[in-house]
Length: 393
Image 1 (spheres, one colour):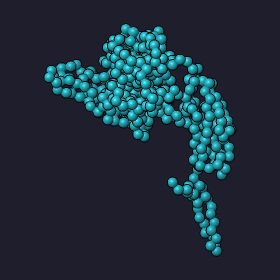
Image 2 (image 1 turned 180 degrees about the horizontal axis):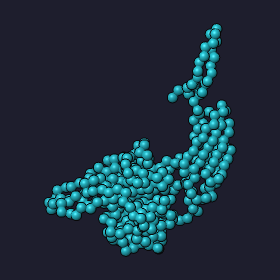
Image 3 (image 1 turned 120 degrees about the vertical axis):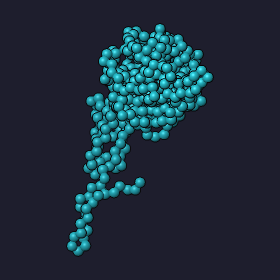
Image 4 (image 1 turned 90 degrees about the vertical axis):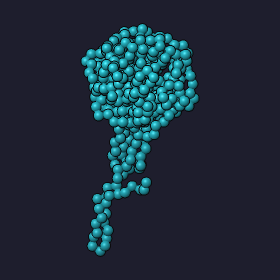
């Protein structure tokens, strides 16, 4: 990249004297970074700015009412929430430039013991255990075949294809509530706390001859199950939604998309997920006009969204047939990274950027590793057909 150009009007005066007027050099480039962008209150964050030319003055707004005029301020966030940070600078040449980063800082409640939550289809339970492994306990029982699980606030939300229900409870299993009944194979579940909505997916019937035709769907309702609405439907021959994620701040939905394929067997025709035909889609909260972020998933089984440093968001997913745990930026840019390979039918994934760990289920065990996939370790084993996985208090 060469030097920045200047836009100037050149005027020639009598005698060949050159006069330059109306010069307007390009505006300087201003950016800033936070030393950490997520954590429990009180959270201390140091901010630093970068500029293509010297800065005369700084004016920071930290989003919680705090401000500073220092070049590299340290600010303490005592409140829980998402905070937008703005930097206004004046350069030595007199340029005034404003840079804003929406929802850059995420502050959670006071540090408390963090747990892993997972569903066990075989036992019909939801389990809870320490993130580093050890003992576990049952928080919900009496389920038929729980599929997916998410923690929002201090509530659990899950789908149970065996009973055709979407349910919720407190994280300790109390105050259990049925949100939807008579669902045909409910799979993924997601929660938008800021708008008071829960989303879930149902599968369409397989295209087997003689089976009743059922449509799949992306549906949502209030957190108490009221006002159920179908956002989009999928027929047996359509690509359908398997797992779903909601990004409240960006007002986006993401889901794993797949389709049924038929294979002739000795006893007839068997329907299964089409080989390596899966994709990750993104749309607005109405699920209309989805865009493809990445494709070629062989058997995508779970999808989560987690926020990284600098405000970037990452999608993590598991692929049971490929035996991998992978991630990609939520806007689809950049290369896909495989964090773990050679896994036995990985079923679910969860990540915590502030902790610097990614967790996943494969086979009958639960694993964790650093965010780049290094230092992988087994933390629970001998589980009973585990599937859903979530992090919570």
